[in-house]
Length: 289
Ligand SMILES: Cc1cc2nc3c(=O)[nH]c(=O)nc-3n(C[C@H](O)[C@H](O)[C@H](O)COP(=O)(O)O)c2cc1C
Image 1 (spheres, rainbow, N blue to C red):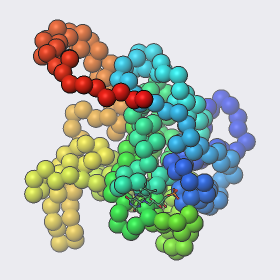
Image 2: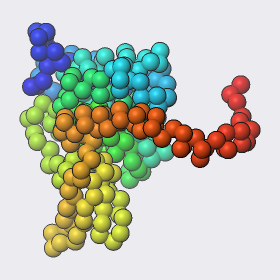
Image 3: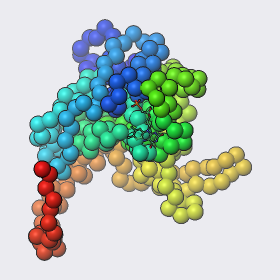
Image 4: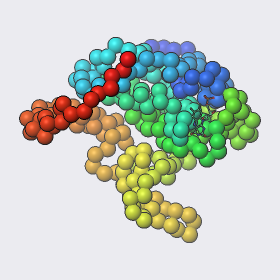
């Protein structure tokens, strides 16, 4: 492993953090992480964090973390962020729930403005990820959601994949799954460079068709053209002006742009209130018990 969380601190073994996004003990996500860990040739300490156990509350959109470097909410975000920062490498595994990643991963990503305060530690951290789905072909956007988390975490996604298995342990009954777990381990250690995905900007493999040939990459949000060729399909996506994570500078520029939102709001507050005021008392709110 090339990266140390804190180069000044001499560590004996590299630390790998497994982010398990399933509530199921010894479920497929947990098993996959443990199997990938067992296939690493680098001596390491595997630390595990079962994300749904942690109290991560919804983002309040106050933008205070961008100014103050940390979120004002008193919940488990700092504990989770500390664990992510202290790890030398990451592996994330999420079950597919209703075609998407398990909700705890999205809730953590929704607090992602806090990641910018730790950009120096998080940037380029080696990571691999897996989306586990019970029904072949029914993984929906679970892998995209997991990759999106890793991109905004500013990690370097070395490989990712979809793994099929429904009952706990079934993930080991597919020979192909085991081969691909080996590939994740090799990619994490840099023993193997995965062929990158189709998007030339970010390596993503999920696109929206905007017209019959115009496409947008759903991971990096850049647009381009898809064209059928004799060998398959050619994808030409180019980076547009406003990037979010293609390199550390674009990530930090995006954070600066977000900081500017507060001034923009102050400048436009009166104008916006004149548009919204009359909606204030409309409707009856149902309150939680
Ligand atoms: C609430 C719920 C929703 C699910 N939705 C999907 C789905 O949309 N597509 C799919 O292929 N599998 C779905 N599954 C199956 C799980 O993804 C599968 O069992 C997986 O192995 C669970 O991972 P785990 O053992 O790490 O919890 C769903 C399971 C649950 C409990």
